[in-house]
Every structure is written in C-alpha cells, then in structure tokens.
Image (cartoon, rainbow, N blue to C red):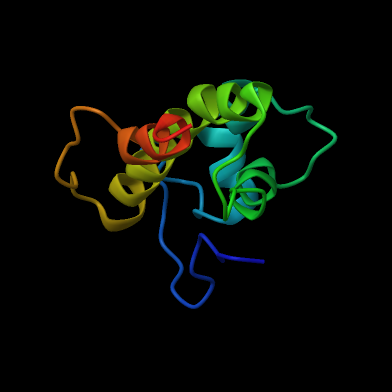
Length: 109
C-alpha cells in the first residue's frame, strides 16, 4: 500500500454531517467515491484501490492512459474535498487538478 489516506489517530466529525464521525468508511459514503470513481460497491475502499494502482512508469497502452485521464482528476478532487472536511478549512484550490500526471502520461510517447 502506498498511502493510508485518512489518519486513524485523530477523530473528527464530518463538516457536512456533524453528527457523524469522519471514518474512512463514512468518508467513502459521504463523498460518493464508488460512483465518482466508477468502481463497483463490492470494492470496500475504492480510493486505496486506485492509489495503489498508480503507474510508476509511463504506460504504453492508450487504454491505461485514458483510464487515468478520467480517474486521476476525480481522485484529486476527492482528496481536496477530504482535506477540506477533515481540517475544517478550504485548502488552496487548483484550477486543473491532476494535470501534471496526465501530461506525464501523454508526454514523450
């Protein structure tokens, strides 16, 4: 695993639903990750699944590059929202979330 994306040592409440503790499972539900990431609900942790599949080398397959072109900006948006909810303040916005990876995927082929 590359990343434990929600700290377990500090409990906080969801800013959107203040009666709910912000656990990993609740964040998956609250941020509608399965739908947004186009992952079946049978996958318990869709964000970790995709983060663990991030390419470490530039993929040659157009299909793989297209997959990440669609999903990576959504992952960046989810992490941006999660940071906002977890810390209770808006992080600096990015006008083009995930564009560095997308440029890397399609550059020098």
